[in-house]
Amino acid sequence: MRLDFLITVKTIVEKGSFALAAKAMNITPSAVSMQVKTVEQYFEKAMFNRAGQSVTPTPFAHELSARVGPLLEEIERLRGGHQASVTGRLQLGTISIMQPVVLPPLFNRLKELAPQLEVSCTPGRSQDLIEAVKLGELDAAIVAEPATASRRQLDWQLLQEVPFRLITPKQMPPGSDEDGLGAFPWIAYDRSTSLGKISRCLSLSIFGARPPALELQSLEGVISMVASGYGAAVVILPDPRLKHYDIDITSLGDDAPTLRFSLVSRKIEHNDRPIKIIRNILKRHYDSD
Image (cartoon, rainbow, N blue to C red; front, side, top):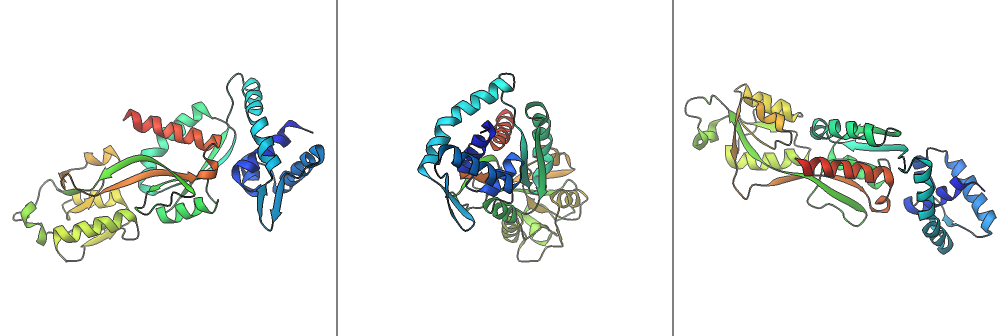
């Protein structure tokens, strides 16, 4: 029996399914089944109880995983020159407004720490990306954390909490000071997103019940339109570079709503090495800011 067959059993125990283990180890599901069968024949014990598409580790599988886990990690360290290499594939979802903030430091650091880890990025809206993580279609995602975030099966690592701000053109038209914004055009951000929904609610309280003069799906597009003098907006500024536009930024007070951006992953994969390295890189990046 080969050592990597034990790694396969341990991975299934950690991830909860043959399919997720196959993806993590970059092998086919049929290869996973063959390796499990070999381990079961070697120990003459069942590793998993199978019921349809779901598998439940037997007590022996849990015991085997716990006993061989430290040994396998030590072997990996010796094999990799005293530093265990992180390999495999990881599918990461990212909402568009966080891509220019997170991806450059993340991928540059991954190139140094885990050059053999293959990371693919999937864009999307927060709600869709969170659902994809739940279903195992994504390993993790960087999203706007909803107020009703599920914590029973998901891990949430806060990256950044950003307050909403009022932004106006540098050169406001006559009679359109902050006290007269009720008659000033305002620009909305995509109403289907968490950011857009909160922004719209705040904007209606500031600009009155008038509909927006324009609605855009790009945060930078909204800010550039404000800088051009077209109107004002209520937005967040997660990327410091956005503050360099020709705009005035006004606080909405100490009680202003905020939006939390977090890394979400499945609890069952809390100790998964590719996810751990992503988590640690992002933590160090935001801690240093």
